[in-house]
Amino acid sequence: MTPTPTTTPRAPRAPSGAGGSASRQHTLRERNLRLVARAIYDAATEVSGSPDAVPPSRADVAAATGLTRATVSTLVDHLVAARLVTELEPVSSQRAGRPAVPLVPARRTVVGLGLEVNVDYLGVRALDLAGDVVADHVEAGTFHDSDPAAVLARLGLLAADVVTRLEADGLRVAGARLALPGLVDARTGELEVAPNLGWSSVHPVELLGLGDLPVRVANEAKLAALAELAGDVPPSFLYVSGDVGIGAAIVVDRALFLAERGWNGEVGHVVVDPAGPRCSCGASGCLEQYAGKEAILRAAGLATEAPLDDLVAALAVPDGGTPGGRARSAVDRAGQALGSALADFVNLTGVSTVVLGGVYTELEPWLRAEITAGLGARVLAAPFAPVDVRAARAGQHAALTGGAREVLREVVADPAAWV
Image 1: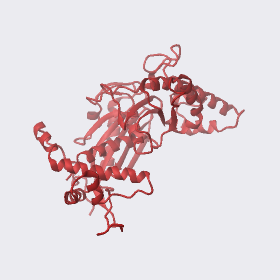
Image 2: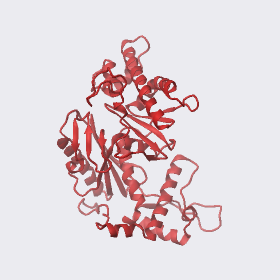
Image 3: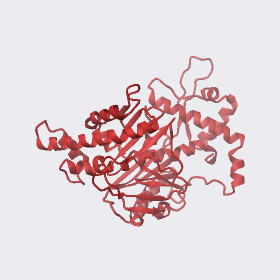
Image 4: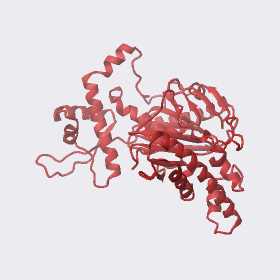
């Protein structure tokens, strides 16, 4: 019988006492559980990126961690019983002894939720430990100058419905990450300001109304950048998320650079022209006024609420066609502005790879030439190390994927809470 939502266990909660939590986290058994879980999940990432790679066996995990085979075997049994790891069918080996049993992350057992409010949509996405999307819901809307209480309550209802359906199917929901397009204080989770939403000084978690489900808040571009780490990307890069607003994230050695409060990366408010149009942030000539989605659509002669497909179709009109000419002129102007602003970022940070996400992923074939030219002309190190510009590969609404993966990363980092 399918269990009801009320009978499905939620994620285990850590002890409330600081001293008890500290001692619990430092036990040898829990340290070894982390080592084993990490070895299996790291290997899964390598397997997904290489068709010739095979999942590790208990012996492989023992070799990778330095633990004895007996210890690894016991710990793997615990992870399997907790439905964090799955054993596949044994495979023959050239080594003497019994066939090896491959170990992989479990499917459809524990999931993480990615939530997002953006200017023109709300989203909920659930991923399991194997990286599969098990629930996905995106609802279009117009959230310029909206009421945060009403919008977050609506998103909370969408998320609660997804949680109910997942738990009814026997899946455990570990928690959620909420992506917002603005300044999020990494220490407190407060949204300080989101100019394109018209929000300021908002405590989002309590407005979601999701009860005891653990929810943390982060900037949209930063979560989208983390989604890229599952693919073939250099360990350090600058991720640029294009939508109505433009955000960015700096990844160094596969970790986000957050600075003091996590407020870095607001490339959309880098001034391109001090005499330019007024921005929603109150300044003039910001990058968003030249390369934001609505700015590009407007310059192309399209409605600001038009789908991106309309712009792409206009760009495909042969030379000489009026729609194509206006669209290409708008995208060229956006590329020039991006090249100028991103050159400042590259000069300051020294990263040599720029990943174009959000709407820029689809527009990358038309943006590339102007961005590359701007970077080549303005980045001091460009003659010695040209900047690599590439389209993001994490797919649509990448912040939802990045948020869900961050939840699951914490599950793998503390498997003892689930065993």
